[in-house]
Figure 1: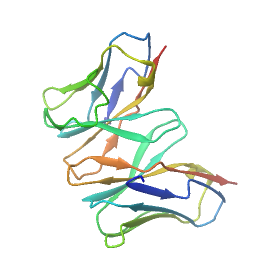
Figure 2 (figure 1 turned 90 degrees about the vertical axis):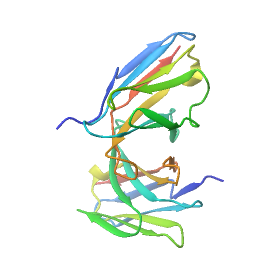
Figure 3 (figure 1 turned 45 degrees about the vertical axis):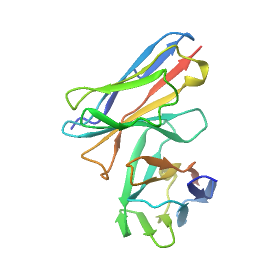
Figure 4 (figure 1 turned 90 degrees about the horizontal axis):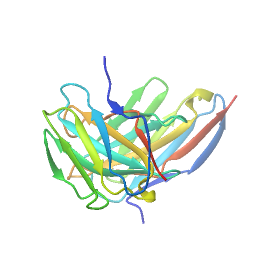
Length: 108
Length: 113
């Protein structure tokens, strides 16, 4: 069993829909990262959080430390949001462990 | 401002040859990470540096892989006697310190024929 599980693996949405991607982990962590990987391969850090909730534009990330669960929400989705979204956790040894990613496709 | 840069962007080599991949982190970032992404697979941690030292080398796949960092700046990942299974995109990231946001470079796509 992977230490970091993401769901769904693939997600197709219509423009304007509200998107939720989930991440569960099984180890103690110091922080959780959400990353976005574009079709060309470039990776952008979206959020790093260790508690509560963060918001940036149409993106919202939440984490529940007790339940070892995080969600990434996208409001008013747009085709340019199409990408792979990756959850990664940092343990006490400062090593990032990655989920397998969620491929999001937003159709116009 | 300048982000993380990596060179070369693409490298094609023959099995058995050695390759060197370079990472230039953001100036002032003390932490530097190397990751690997094989085709169609997720990211794997390889090694990180705090300053010029690497406290955790456990992610390096074999003793053919080595990395160094000098001047708390540029880092080089060296793969000796490359094998076809080494084909992947090698990504570098840097951050102000541990437990800070990581900034990723564009990666080096390595193809071993």
